[in-house]
Length: 130
Image (tube, rainbow, N blue to C red):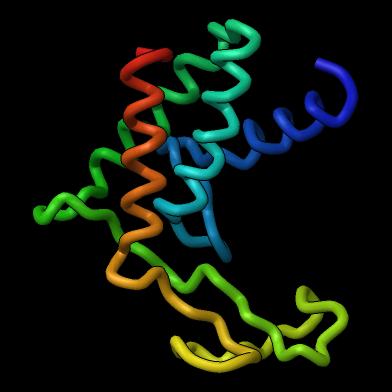
């Protein structure tokens, strides 16, 4: 692959861990894994990338192994809301873990975002990849 798509794909493939997941701050992340799989599924579907099937399947298997008994998946602090005056939010490394205000990093409320994202990638996997 060439251009930005090739570089992006190579980055994603290189970041996948041997067990099939992607990390957030060095820790296994269901949310990051689902986002990476969403991108890979898109490439697979649009370019018939059969070489990606095994990589996607490995990630899906890891995600399935992480599902809670209630059907949801673990969430984490994933959404940064900088103060309005902050011009470069990525440089502001101190975010308060809370659900309200500015200058915060908030969790995925009741695991809804993560679970919805995972449901989406599993549906696409079943329909187009499996």
